[in-house]
Image (cartoon, rainbow, N blue to C red; front, side, top):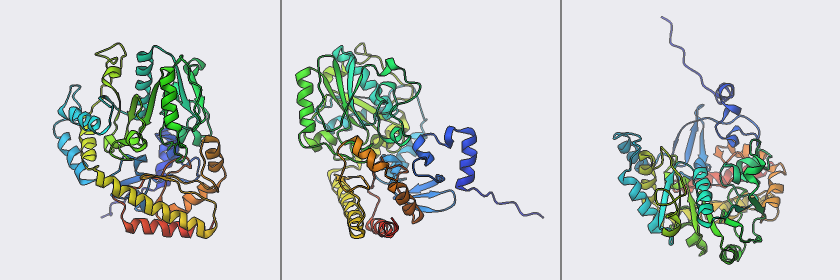
Length: 425
């Protein structure tokens, strides 16, 4: 009798198959390893601070789905919430109690955030928020900052950070001149000229898509004042920072309140969900109350709201203190390893968020961040860490995301790996 053959799956074979049926072999460009080289690992499963690839290798994971897995992968409370929700059906096209509960949870945490509208992604949130701002003000133009990434809607894709920067692009083919004619791009950390044609100024309050760059002292405050003077709205894109920095997000962290917020990642607990929100007055312009239309078949999906609510209920003040302590220990350890080896590198930390630049000074805007990303060091460091079982994002423009599941053991192993890799740089 012939023994059944064991199916052998490798990262390389899966990538070959993927490239035959998926453009570039991936469903989001950065995953193709284009900016670091090599073959991407295909994840088979994840648990806590770890991911496991299809070949059985385990990695200490600091991608954490680019931010949503703040509790760590496959957290029992989230798995239980999703499992329970799924037994009642996966989508209804009708309102649910969890939509109300998560909206109440979010608005209770953020001063000035009176109402939210749930959507299915961060891109959808920012796209809809721009329409709402234009409808509210009756103005057309928007201002964004070079290196800030607000998703892939046409009017916001110009001069974006993160994935588009890693592709070596300044925009995208297929975006018409008319689509970006009303988009003004300004340097980050410089207050632009805002006149009475500008509907909204869009900003990542912490730029986390060109490495990690914080706002200079007075920048957000000055931007708030300039918008007030011009009658323009200020929009915080908190898809990354929202409910990760602290209980009330960037507005609480910096003491500056925008007019419109956009959220994603953490609020979905690892499932696709985004949201945008504002005051009662501004949100009153949104259909069905007002004339600004927005809709979505899967908006407020019952699985996503269950996961997001479970995640947020674990994010107490103490949890944020613990997460910041984890990030501090990791960041300080990495910086010490670089300094001891005499390698030019900075590991900026803002609250529980970390960045990494292979340069002597921390960048303050996109051009200096781009110079650091283009110097060729990050790909070597990335692969050195991956070989030692530590997974960072496959691109120099991404942040580092520690989770509440990362213990001292994982942090120590990571710092040991950094020490070994920097000796080879």
